[in-house]
Image (cartoon, rainbow over the protein chains, first blue to last red):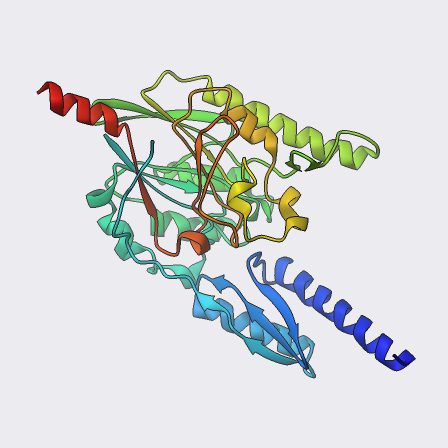
Length: 89
Length: 247
């Protein structure tokens, strides 16, 4: 592995850590979002409470890292009433 | 028989208003009370707490909550508690409340809780002042839960926390962050009394069911885990059955 490749790998790890930090700090404040590197893209997963939050996460990351290819697999948590009861014993 | 609904980590802000309400309007058909396991808001602002009160308040059943770490983000927790209390929502922090439901006394003891980790992989009260402060906070909070649990005489007792009392319900989370998701001291406090159920949130990628070392059922009711507006748990079923037999 050449020096350039090593630098690139380290940069990816730092980038991933920085995005994780962005997700959990006061700007976004989402603890349930996962970040995975897949080839040349970063894949975001997990669930949030509204479509607005999902879109805002992707907007902020894209704004800060415009060269990063982002794949957004973040879902919206369902909020329907339950259909069953669990008996605790 | 008592039925309680529970959810945590709803992180309400303006953009969530109306998402839970249709299911909450149905709640009195399914349960006698609603317990909310912290992270009521997103950034812990008073405005977000107002949104939570609007979405989760004014129900036909009692609502009891603890705060979560998100509710502390803006250092407004005292104002949040005042606002929620004024809205008719009971907020517990090292306290217990008793609900009279169908002739039974349901006790709910609650604290936010704190991290620290679990047997074999926990922070220790040693070394730097900052580390000792961390662990001392864990121990103080757990003692407050134990005192609250022991403060009431009831037919069924539920422990309500944001942080987890057991590692079982963290399954699915990275092992590396377990110490930030809960602590064994909360489990020990719960096992110091005959609790019927322990409810917590915080672990969005965790799993739903576990037990304390003493055998108390534990349920992770974080919204991303249960994937519906709330879960419903039935307590004191045997007593209800015995009454039916006696009749």
